[in-house]
Length: 157
Image (cartoon, rainbow, N blue to C red; front, side):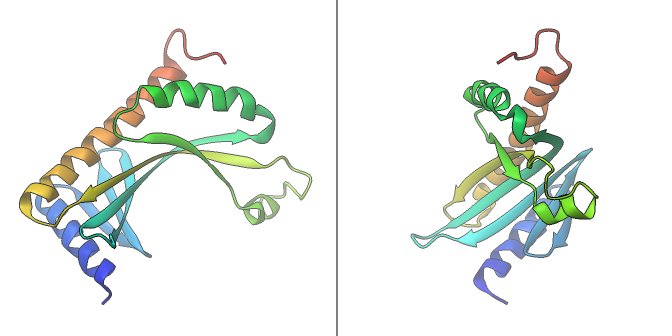
């Protein structure tokens, strides 16, 4: 077992003890908290401690012809986020080809929430800080996106 797998297992156990449903996936963990599913990846930091990366799939997709407007809107949304950021992640072109969209289909991007947290160690205080960061990250990103999509004014870029 590598050092990062050991740290990941300790983090997973701590989050399960704090009442979250945690599932091991290929090189990380999937944390279920209500309807949200956050992917978590951990790796030792070369300066000491552990880097934890969080990824929240929002099930939002954007085609490249909408990028200028979307980027302006995401920039405005990101200014209000304290625990993460919204990013665009290009979908693999092979997925588009398998879905029958062909090579001429516009490039599609997924909108994701991302956050990184450095833990000085995996002691109880730092693991509780991770749990709180995870909760606030998921809540903040989800509420911001929902408010924008379903709110009265929304964002017009």
